[in-house]
Length: 213
Length: 196
Image (tube, rainbow over all chains, first blue to last red; front, side, top):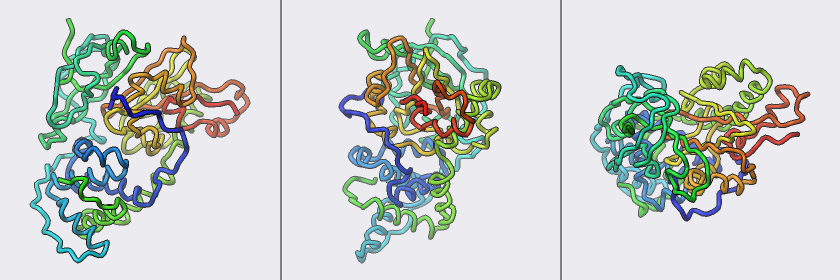
């Protein structure tokens, strides 16, 4: 979403309970539990969120979570969208037959650290102060290199903990842990000479970065 | 593939998904209810407010918090999912920090709870990395031209929390009274803490 235009004014800073309606709380809990049930890690859920149809994505935050859980569970063969649709129809009074569950193909990701943090045996390729350029990656699956910082030059300001590589883990291609860096960009590098003056810091995995010499 | 053509009411979809997972033994209803209750009642910005008040009143704690946020926050008993590595950003008269997740809605749950609507909204996610001064002004925070802005996009497993400036005139307040002043919005960096 970074830098996209047309979304209008920000919403007011109102205090509201975390869940506006009881189903939102269920959607939240079901997402967390579905990640476990699907045998995946958080990147698979984020990738599923990115595949929610745009209209649904923008319509409601927790409905988006429900649809993403469904996509993720279908990816792992735990249950199909047709099962959910049939069950929903029966719950609202329709006499609809329920399809069989699909065949399981869970990725069985091991969980070897706090959350998604891991260790990497090789030393980090970059050090604090290094100038780096972000790669021209156009991932067909999932990535945590946002478009607005692609092909931009910045400075490493901190080494962050290594973690599973989202681009691999989301596609069930293994954890592939990578070093991670806080990289800072000048606003004019991102948005041109007329940009508001500020600095932007973002955490980027090593495969996203190239050294600037 | 799930499509918009499903037209399933969200509340019905939640029940349908829950019932399918429960009957398969993949979800325990009690665990589900416990998750909901936890984030409704015990995890929220009141946790982060305690961290901030401690940092304002105990310089050694403040030092530990800025050096290793995760460990210092755990000292007060706050840890858990989406808090595996927390970095605390200190606002000063010269520098203002503000936090976003442009890719989804990453947020430091153990200290702030679940994110509010404005944080999850495309308007905030798209604009704060492009025109932060204008967005902060829209929220009602007018920063002086001499204040440098640093925006943090939470794109990895690191989660960020802002340590706001202590308001003037609060020298006589207790740690508990100070914590009551600290808001969620100040700990994301879209507001300042107001004096009582």
